[in-house]
Length: 333
Image: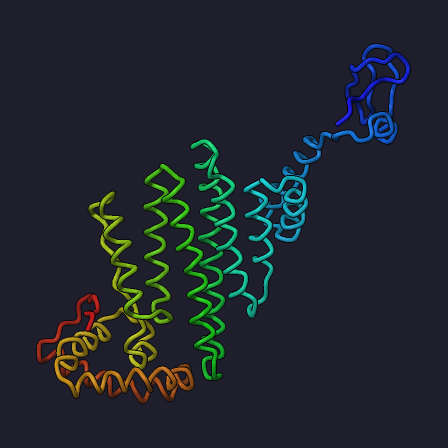
């Protein structure tokens, strides 16, 4: 780039002041356009402008104004493509404004934004890495929970509609992938074990809370892996009982997967029915049929009343015959 030279005195000492270029030798002032003519091009310092955009973006973030936050972070990202904060939060706040049918797409977009953040902070010092990780962790946890909850509420309201359960499964998987990608980034770039463990504990709770929408083998494998890693730092940690979607009718009747009646039925399933080939055949048939029945009728009073009488009688008989009703971790079979 050609040097900027004053036309009046030939000095090279020109500085930018109040939007003009001023010759320190003779005091001649030039507009930006005049400066461009003098040297062909001139590099405009946008540091102050970018700082103002960052202030506006963070203010919108503090106020919970997703629309303004997306706008200002987008403008900042155009001005500074290497800003990890802008790269993440522009996508995050756009995702916060999405509709139910768009959740799967934006959950994936947030996960991709995490990969972008990782690339941008890769060569930063450790202090900057810690700042970045601590800044994005809570928003990621919150949006994963929001997406999963909205999808589950949608399922509960429309469970009788064909395809809604499968749609909710996919959305919950996408939401959990945000936490999965976040865990990878946190473990790679954050040196604070407390942040890592806190995230992993939440990850376990998230999977447990939405367990019925996940493959049983994946659920048990992931929770076991997370729990083992947590206990390396927190030896007292006890993983919650995995709620993996079995006992669909009983869960609909009693309102939860974790209660004395369902604990009794789950023990009977795992240690009595599952011990014979015809018992396992019954379980597979039950799992093939009962989710559809619950989707269609699980919210109706007649369905719950019809099955509660029969389940109560069955549970009482099992308990009288020694099947316990205490908290229970499902057996993998």
